[in-house]
Amino acid sequence: MAILDILTAPDPVLKKKADRVKEVTDEIRTLLDDMLETMYDAPGIGLAAPQVGVLKRVIVVDVSGDDEDPAPYKMINPQVTWASDEIGLYEEGCLSVPKSYSEVERPVAVKVSYLNENGEACEVNADGLLATCLQHEIDHLNGTLFIDHLSRIKRSMIMRKLTKLKKTG
Ligand code: K1U
Ligand code: ZN
Image 1 (cartoon, rainbow, N blue to C red):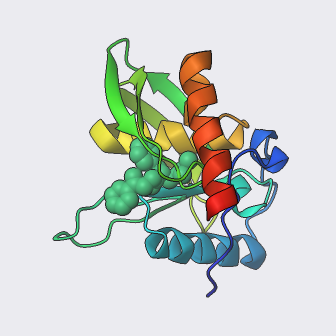
Image 2: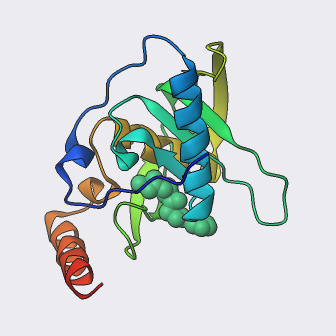
Image 3: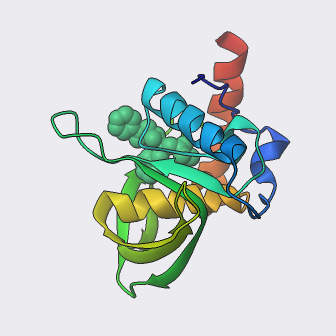
């Protein structure tokens, strides 16, 4: 397994739409394993393939707590097939927008269909942090960052902070 480099905004790859995976191959399974290792190392609770420079519709998520057993999801071509009318606020972060957190409004519950690493069709009903994280990662596959859900002023404040951070290290 390998730890991959995580791209940070404003890298143009993060704004591109990722391609659907046509066949679940060993190459995709290796990508999923490398992404999971990269996510745990960061540390984070989710990671999407475009964040490691791969424009494929692949994500990994694990929202289990430190004192719980790991509960990794490896998802290929994930799709939200239902979203609750109820909207909630959650303070989100992003490994591609380091050191910035902001509240984002999203449906509190979603149903997501996807292929697992064996190419089998699966579905998960998610609420709470898992629902938030899945929506955040699926956004990445469509070139959307959590800061794109914020006002223009908040977004430009975060981007200015990020530019400064990149200069000073
Ligand atoms: O997609 C990403 O950049 C990962 C991101 C996922 C996420 C966080 C919060 C709300 C929605 C989606 C992160 O994992 S940021 C880091 C983080 O939240 C975290 C890190 C260590 C322990 C617990 C959380
Ligand atoms: Zn993110």
